[in-house]
Picture 1 (spheres, rainbow, N blue to C red):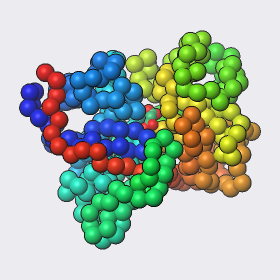
Picture 2 (picture 1 turned 60 degrees about the vertical axis):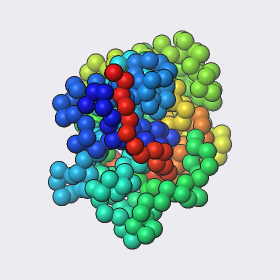
Picture 3 (picture 1 turned 60 degrees about the horizontal axis):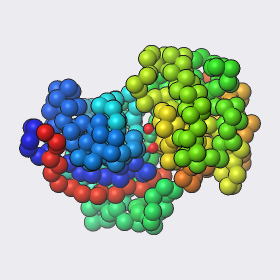
Length: 355
Ligand code: NQM
């Protein structure tokens, strides 16, 4: 396929942007596939100037979609995180933001028929094994991306995409509390390690010497903080059973602080070392799940009037509202998690990879 074009749809999904492919239009061998994707995205040039990537991890993403392997769902979605300055391709996490475009892509490519007004696509997240339902508008049986829903971090409005997750609990690490405890200590700092679809280390901002209200640039400029986050990332990865995570995008670290804009909690997230402009979807769901647990780091900071939300997570770019339904058993179980996103088709055509 080198030198020739590959069919590709560029989509914004939530606050991420990525290249969407049908699996059977890419090489089947993962090594050749990853080599091709690196050249398509322009990695490892930090500017990704010769490819589709946008020089940030939230715009250096790939979704590979294929027909379902079982009748229990409609399509398989494999997410790949491509490095920006490093030639890495990782399948160690999924992405709930790009997921917001998967159902529409499946309809546009003819994998799933559109409903008369609305369509629900059952998507299997190949990276984690869980299933998400994605529901979106299809008036006249065609995908309509236009609408009146605004989400923080994206200018303007678009059609709402409802995402509903089940079986995300422990889907990367094996259990909701992968260390077996609701609270651990790393480098003398109290942390809660959680996995409700995304492995996350929750830390009080004040415990690492910041307020939790800094801008991304201020956090990025704080080299002592970056070193601390790196150490937390590496050691939490071991504690969570993820092994050597030095080149892996997970676990994420989320700093929490009291809300100050009417939300349930204020957050600043690192993916894994660079400040996130907002917060990931499953990252946000995992943080809220942790905060709901008695004894978790930050539990006392959560401001909420309802047991299942929606919980408005304040982040560096605004707010993300998530719903998390827990049952009260011991240990607690997650019934479902929900979030509203928007998505948009940016182009559909042929991409020509760098030689
Ligand atoms: O947590 C960024 C994003 C994500 C992932 C990241 C995501 C999620 O903002 O489900 O969406 O945490 O790497 O898209």
